[in-house]
Image 1 (cartoon, chains in turn red, orange):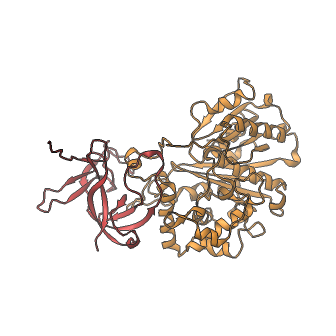
Image 2 (cartoon, chains in turn purple, cyan):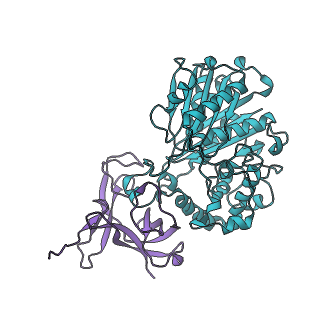
Image 3 (tube, one colour):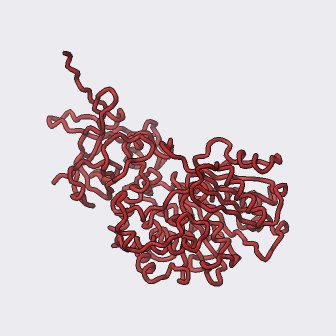
Length: 145
Length: 386
């Protein structure tokens, strides 16, 4: 009998990295413009700031903590068959401590507990299992309390 | 650069619409051409009079307008197909308006049409990772904005449930609407949850449908008595820093937009016409979701932010109110055939300004405004007068 080792596959490469610090926490990767200071997520492929139009972007890691600015719990399957995660699920916006708002799925067992202003933390979790039996992972934010 | 309002006056010579609903056995070119024939009859014109044609649709594929024309007669005129999400119809109208205003042609037609696809829709309005993350649920994107709006203004679920009640009441007087039955506040608030806090009756229904408008210079008008002047046809498409989840954009914390796209398109339209929001006798706003009608009314400047709920409750937006909004039932009753919606709104304004709206007629309506949004994002404002 062969043991099939489940692989973990990111939904998309280049969205996050695991910190080299002892805690080994994940960090989202973004771009910061050295000219105007704007912070962008996901990291830009081209060295071009969509705010000030300068070629002065650098890769940065984003804060892994923030607060929920808005959210919704979705009770029906999204159209198109692109989303393969569980339903219901919740997504919305998180304002990170370093001054950027990003769209994210929320990780929680209790949708009723979600509230605007709630403190949340970045986690990397399984979104669904692909046809080869691998866990496809994505970034989510999880309530801290 | 010449300003549009310094150009030739443009009039709506005729409009054509078909009842919106589901046409499983008909294609977009079937009811699209029906809308064109209705518009020609209304304008007392022949197809050979039309010199330029713009067709708005989202999901009809390559050469969709050409397919319609094959049902009418190929005359060699230029046909341009316009895809601008849910403002495709109003974007087609704007292009036809510009052609006549700029004196490139004298008579142009704008058509909006959609047969809504069933099954998986290959959405390109969102990036692949956004689709895979499930961020393309427009009800949920609006729900997110609704939560934010409720937080900022104190509006309640009951407040925006009243939008559905008002619009379904108006829709009951519109023979072309998909839903022609009123609903009660209790029914709205007890309908099934779709994406918190939005329930089924807070979401506009989809539909198949088409609408058309023939635009021309004053000298080409057959019946001046029924003609309507287009005073402004504005399109704005996304401003940096504004969050618009239905268009896949997040707000910038460091550089938030000073003016959002709806406000910007409204400002440009008011500036072009010299009118203000207080001059509008009849208004069609973009009620894809009930809550969106509230903030759309505010963004168009009809009242201050956070005031729409109370005004709605007091009847200000009723057909007999100070600012009648969505007199034909809006998207909520009419249904939403994406590419046709913007032109459906324009048809209602024309019908109202002509005084031909029957039971839903606004008394003495002289100036009207139609506003359509679209993923992208897009915002288009049309102002017309009697």
